Length: 525
Image 1 (spheres, rainbow, N blue to C red):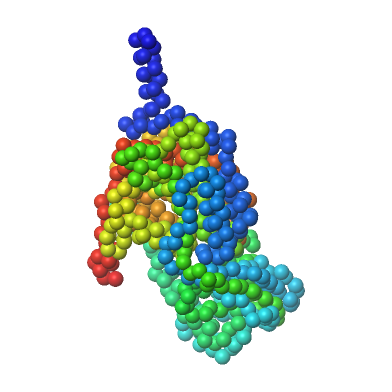
Image 2 (spheres, rainbow, N blue to C red):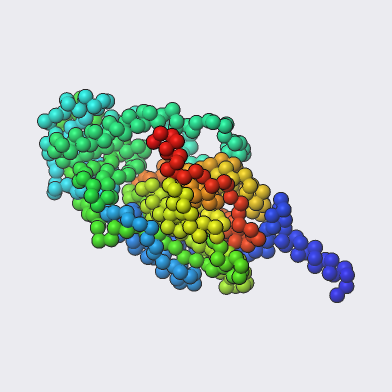
């Protein structure tokens, strides 16, 4: 071989394993990831089964269990190893609604848009009557209703003043919004909700006292206005999943517009007659909570015991089918690990470290699945007593902000990974992903890892209509997911996971946090 040919081959190899900011990125592997993800994507098929077939996946419900087992079966079908349902601890009862109806019979018929609140019982057959609209601003207002609520249909909460939406419900990030995200927050700055926290706590306390008052007075069913409009329902829980919880009252969220109509009729002295029938069930045959896990084993003798993780939460609320929150994140993670498994089968491309996917349960009840998993495998955040797996862990990548495409990643205040992630994003600038921000983001499962000083990250995503329409709502369904965005996200997540698994070293970490017990003691709690 001539010297010129050797030089040419060396240059070709150098540009295949490109160094961005001194962090190697294998562009040949990236090209293969893109080809598999773009040409043979399974994301919408996976989404169909999780949403349309299995429906809403409330933690410990029959639907959640069926969807979890389906994921295990799918991982086994793909040839992943150690696919299983893994318990993270005790959760409590499951719940599902079997049948319900609510209608206004007088002064005219109206089929009311509504949905039962989770972990509430059904009604004792059909309940008919005129509802009572409670107007409660303070605890003393409750006395005005004493002795009037036995067997009553009670409307709690003022009707909402609905305003037109002059801005589009769906949007993508633009240069300005991404530039704002890249700016570090002001030192000591309070989050946007900080000033509202006192009022929120006051209303929460008043609500608890109101519900207890209704139970003591023997009310039959509670109606509440949805916090969405245009007939969309935002529905959470009205009772507890705990086995020893006091029984709740039957409760439904109803469309804000329908709630408003009924309230106006009552305030104007016009008789209203409602007819309600709700049939719900509790499930207590297995009170353990479960995550779904599976692995793509590492191939490097010295690194295969180290771990890179990816995932999203599988559970959802129950009025929709949990498509954007968070079947979307689950199918992106599933597709990412399928792509990497396929590259191994086709081209012999194997990760050095073991890659483990986790689909979490109990996220909507406080990150229960991921926190239980982290405590079981890595350590106790209250005492910061760490386990051996803590040392062998490299990173966890999470997706849980709807179905919007990936635009970048939150560093979670870990500036040491900035040049690494900038390099990982470089091949995807043409797909709109280039933003790296030092900021934290919360509300989802990467926090379970971050709380133990482990690198846990959430991607920046286009908002679409997540916060304005689908989040925790009856419209969180398959139809509001953007296929091309999920495909893009799957490819990027696959590349991040692969390159993290191939680094000579684990990702750099932040200093270990203080034990939670010590932090609470210092804050006087």
